[in-house]
Structure formats: structure tokens, C-alpha cells
Amino acid sequence: MMDLPLIWFILLGVLLTGYAILDGFDLGVGMLHPLARNDRDRRIVMNSIGPIWDGNEVWLVTFGGTLFAAFPEAYATIFSGFYLAFMLLLAALIFRAVSLEFRSKLHHGMWRTVWDYSFCGASTLATLLFGVAVGNAMIGLPLDERGVYVGGFVALLNPYAVLVGLMTVAMFAMHGAIYLCLKTKGELQQRVREWMWHTWGAFLVLFMLTTIYTLVEIPRATPNFTEHPWAGLIVIAAVLSIANIPRALYHERPGQAFLSSCTVIAMLVVLFSLALFPNLVTSRPMPENSLTIYNASSSEKTLGIMLIIACIGMPFVLTYTAVVYWAFRGKVKLDDHAY
Image 1: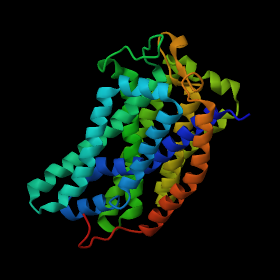
Image 2: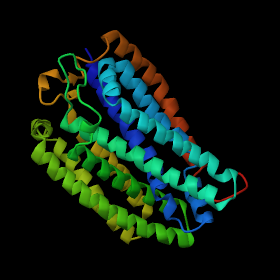
Image 3: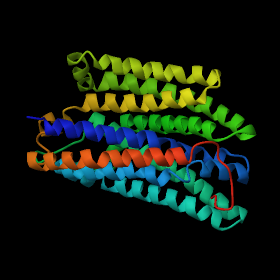
């Protein structure tokens, strides 16, 4: 018999990884957007993600739908406990989309400046909220015996969660800067190289602080690593990928730096999943109230049918994504239809 809850836990991790890598760089581009010096450069920055940003967010929608269908009790707890945070996230994602579409409607300087900073602010807020959510998942939430969140919104803004949020902002900004280096040329690309070094440095500092904080304050995050020695390879891969980014930047190989950045994000998602397993929502200070992949899952029949549908549908999604990225490969060129 297949362990269907475990399979869907892994598939959720795959969806989260896909979203973090793909939407991570366009959120990073949004955060860096106002740093461009003139309107032409800002248009180039915005058009670097123009054809693909909405497709990237499909991964988030798919993740939410999968969580709802496979683990409905965890979905109910998360979306009710994080209700205000999710409303803020929704507003941020809406303002990102509106900023992209509205900026080019008028040529007035003030009009474009307002949407430029709206684009930056919404991208930063969305990224920060994603990181805060991950931080709270790691440190745990106050749940009652029915698995219902009994805290408030302010409780979600604890120091550890905010630190993880800031690390996520720095990581996505770094990821976006490296992506922009691949999509730009000339003077703008030279400025982007400076952004890459600054964002990598900020990420490195925050990553080290977050790692130390996690090891000291969340001892339950490490048992799975001692039980499964192969997990040490994930840690090594993450550290080597972080170290390879400045090496690739120094040798002017942005493609390698981008692959390393993608690997860093993927490895951090795997480490997060390993630290969380088998929980989906960890209860603190009463761990017996935690929602696991087994006590919060749908029926075996439901999970089995979903797996069949996923096996049929995922190849189409991956093919579509690959075709879109291939069609819009290369440097950004502005034309009459650009943002």
C-alpha cells in the first residue's frame, strides 16, 4: 500500500518549491524596480517579467487548491488563523497586478512614480508575509484540542517569524537581481551587478542569523536530520550553492549564479519540510494538538483519485511552463506592446 498522505506532502513541497523559485525572482524584480534610474530602465525591468509573472502565480493557486483537497483540516486552520495576513497578501498580489497593467496607461511622471512604488511595496509586502508564514510554521502556533488557532494577528509577528520574513525578502531580492542580469545589457546590467552583490550579502547575514536562531530556539527542528543522515547532503548542497553565487558573479557567469540561487531556494524548502515533518501545523506549547499529514488528511480514496489526476495534469503544466520560458528567452527588448 502506498503512503498517500506522505506522497501528497512531498507533492506540496514540489509545488511550494516551484512557486518559490518562479515567483521568487519576479517578486524580487518588483522589489528592485524603483532602483532603476530612468523610465526606460524601469520599463525594461518590468518587461523582464511581463510575459511570465501571472503564470508563475498559478503555482501558488495550485498549492492552495492541493492543500484544501488533500489536507482540509490543515487548510481550515491555516486560512482561519492567518485570515488577516491572507487578506493583506491578497491585497499585495492584486496591487502588483494592477501596478503592472496601469503604469503604462499614462505617460505622466507622477502617475508612473505612484505605480512604481506600489509595485515595489506590494512585492515586498507579499514576500515578507510569505516568510512570516514560514517562520510561524517553524516555531509553532497556539492550537486548541480541535486544531483551531487561538492566537491573534499580533502573535504572528514574533521575532523569529519576522527574521525569517526579512531573510525571504533578501533571498528573493537576490534571486530577482540575478534574473535581471540575465535579461538586461549595457549600463543597466552593470548596475544590476551591484544589486546582486548587495542583496547576496544581506541574504548571507540574515541566513546565518536565522540558522543560529533556529538551532537555539527550535530544538524539534533537528531530530529528523539525526534520524535520516542523508538529510545532511541537503544542508551541504544549500551551503555550497550559497557559496557558488559570488564565485559565479566574480567570473561573470550569471547563468550559473541563477542556477545556484534556484538550488538555494529548493534546498531551503526541503530543509523546511524536513524540519516540519510529519506536521503540517505544529501546535505550541501543546504539541499533541498538532495537525499532521495523517490526522488532517482526506480519505485514502480521495487522495488516490487526486494522485491519478495529478499524474495526468502535471506533464501538461510543466510543458506549458517550459514553452513559455523558451518563447520569451533572451534579453528584454522594448516595443509598442511593452509595458
